[in-house]
Image (cartoon, rainbow, N blue to C red; front, side):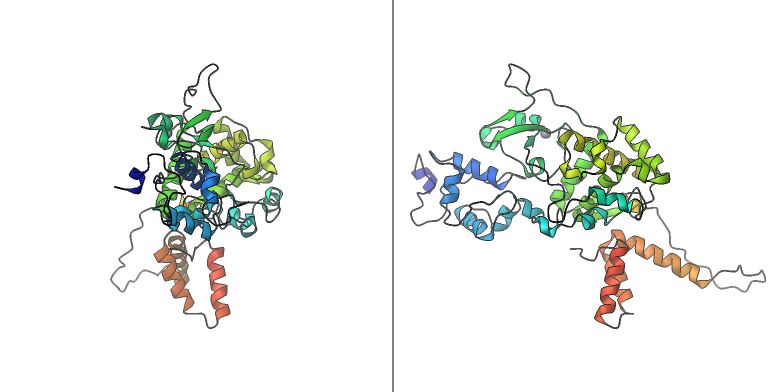
Length: 414
Ligand SMILES: [Zn+2]
């Protein structure tokens, strides 16, 4: 007989020397830490999440546990449940570092590095001065993190077998401004208030009804972006036209396009034409505040329009429908099959040899190696190893690493 069966009305403090909680539901896939704690406390009479935390014997005051959970709290929670500290960390925003964001401390997130490491639609140097207008003061910004709003898919909630499984999902709530739709039902996530394990109050409820309003389908391009984000979150990488990229590349690339479609047309010269075509095809005009307010600080309706434009732009680049001159547009475009020339047997020819420098081949080979290294970790490692043979000092190696970063080649794969 388990300790849970022994007590019909257990309390979380019944462990009498044994630190494990008698009842502790398993976290649901994608659930936040606080949602799981709330569902756990539901299993006990007369106690809430705060009582569970008080009983841990470690200080949790003033800490937003869904954002960052200190290690002593994680290990105390791991001892009280059957989850590992590692699994519990994944249920917080800190579990998304360093691929979704560099740090949960705004002091550790540099706007320019995150947003402008890549360029897709616009040449890298274009509108550089304009970008500064959207840059938030240092130490005040986290990528993709906005004010706390809970969202959920009404159809996913309808599908649950039991109210006990009603939970707050990290991808739907906290940091993931990138996700606006349910990847299963392809409908918009709806704003709501969730009481984990019990019920959901929908913001958009028909008058006089406790049912939710009919779900709103999202455009196919937005659903596709959300699908990739979900894959990146769960698999750590995502397949793009140019090959598989690390989740960290995907989130930065997407944030780059979000910033590029936010650029005022007047700042983009010739490139105003494709940008304007993107906005026109969404059926919305660019919210004016996007010129000087970072995406994370826009209103929800403005964010949805910008994400729609970014998704449209990515789709157009992938289908070669617009001119994109950013250095990293190649990550989105399908990689063309390029057979290696087997060469020709040397023959003596009487015809004059065309004037051609041996460097033509070398330069083409370097370009190809750099393009491959941008999307392939093995190619990046090989190229770095090859180039490193010319380095004589540690400073030379640093210079080389910097040159790789400038070329958009990541050196911190896996
Ligand atoms: Zn759903």
